[in-house]
Length: 457
Image 1: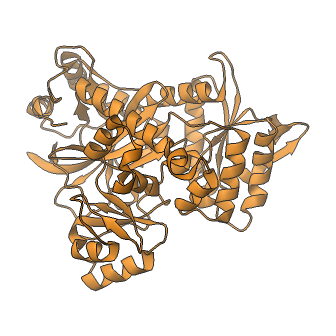
Image 2 (image 1 turned 90 degrees about the vertical axis):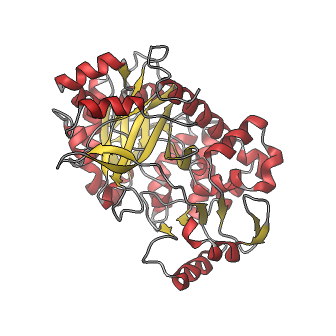
Image 3 (image 1 turned 135 degrees about the vertical axis):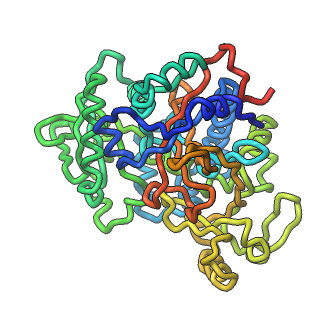
């Protein structure tokens, strides 16, 4: 999908200044830590339509992997994703308690190179991050931008509203139900995350949910229900991640929740199984040329266009994009500056090593690869993103790199979460903890006169 930048050019002609939210909310202050991007970004109606369709096809291919490659054995799929015994036990119990509990919620992180959008990661389930549309509302409070948005017929998605709608739909809640929802973290993360969790549940309450922040250690199972203090819980909204399930007391912490799930006493959003499909190892399974005969023509088209070459770090021979075979180690050593090494299950850039980093010598790169062989790691071909122009606080414009976080919900497109960094900076993995800025996105209303102004024909 190619793009032109007519809408962005019109925006920059009008706005030669930094544009951040005129006002912000508690949730956005907590979520972004005040690190706002210097302007919003834009997508055409065609781009939204194409990205949504492509990502839904890619998600469908990911969801078919256990049956295509493991005869439906979810434990074997979990092992292939690099999970350990405690994690696999939890996934098996969760999956057996609530079969076919695949979610429509996800966030694909993409770069835009000269050929189109490319997927780096595809996170699935309730632990994806998003701003909820508050930044968009804050930017629209600027009168000049509000007029521009009206002229260009721009829209945005309230991601929190879509999140709640998706949760209600997937947990079987009627639109007028007021379930008790426990927004649940892992105990060791709770103190650090409590501010964010508390801010989010206050937003949820405005949308009709009776919601409370908590951690797993606060649950008690009795009288046929799962209790949080003196409140029986209807829905556990899972904020904890698969990487948390490695503590020595994991089984004991999970027992009240998993037992209640197995007995039908509570619902969970989303399943532990969903994190398997958001694993980088699952992307490698899609990319593996030995599996191409398993996918439909439509799936192969999307895989070829969106997914850069991705491979497990294996001692076996691999097939490159050009069809040649070689040992993975030889291939990766020869192409160090075009590859990035990633752990399969961690998040937030943890453990990621770009081969092109000036700090990574050839000797260090080879050592890292040997240590990662046949472990929970993947290699992915480097994406060379095309910069977007952003206003410079000192005047003029400067090129920035944008990580386009495209969110999917049960209803389809669920909004944008962007992470932005200067193109001439030294930030190689765009993550909030590394000083990048979080941004918002607008799109042209479908069917309107500018619907094709940025999209490919």
